[in-house]
Length: 481
Image (cartoon, rainbow, N blue to C red; front, side, top):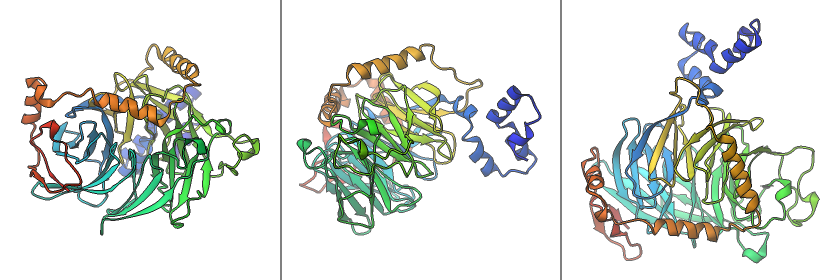
């Protein structure tokens, strides 16, 4: 008997509450008819759980905006990267740093990823300096970082092949997708992303890359035009995408661009647009022809439209977008208003709004196995969320005004071209505001010096091509090459 069947004889309101809270699943787990792992899988997608998300811890340690947060495959460690060019490993449940090392990057770290099946000792990263770097952590705590490649322009995102400890991809504002194999430090140029709007250059400046989790032969990229492109990795050297996705009404708008793309477990493609909405595409919603931007026949017109998620605002930074729930039941995004927006994937109804930053929320990372969530933004802290609220968290009292203000700001600036150059200029101005840690107050210095659990790092400089930035004055340095 399922939950719906068990509640069919009850009145409609109690039945709805029973379904939302999944009491029947709890009953089946208690009598032994439902495995604990299956129970956790079902309960993680419950709307009631999402509405009880509450901040339960903040992680402090970075001295700049936190641009990336990522759980390791087992979920017991969190890695973060920041404008301060440091990468930190966290025991996030205990709220303690386990390792800090200088990334070797010369500018803001945009993404850091722990490679699968590496015992958390292999980390890849990319940054505003265009470099793609690899860090190896030895058992005695030594950290050695080296440059694998450098894009001609900022490199925003990496995509790790599912289950592979050695293979990953990068994309940059030079419009190039690179493939890396850590077994021989080999890199391969896979794709040059061709731009439809030649007035903006021959290549699309890329902001995001993601691999299809159910078919790793396909990867999707998004950048400074309206098209999310899907490429077949088996066709190396072919710059023609096998699929393109965009809302029909955005075709022909050269100043709207993509900040992030994400795949669901069902191979749906989620696309977030700068100063526009978020759209969810099914596999068969691809654009059929990209040769004439003003031709209505350019988009498939079968009566179906992508699901739209509204209410947030995505203009000031390169924001991420992600799924939440064990079966990708929800869509979540940060916003310029400092809130986290979580919608039902089906139907697009807003489920909850959470205050996630004093200014802007950029990154949202769901835990790989449980209902935890890590977020970061313009603040120097990482927020951790869990469904620990006794009651369902209400919407902010001024939620309608916040969303109306987001909408009004988007409409007022609809004719302003928020190009990647403008966004990168904002990021550079923000990074210029940092102060040297030696000039920070003694409380901050004491906090960094007294943290336990650090690995001991060896300071060595052995490259004249890459230079480590010693302006941070940190005693926790590493071998950089």
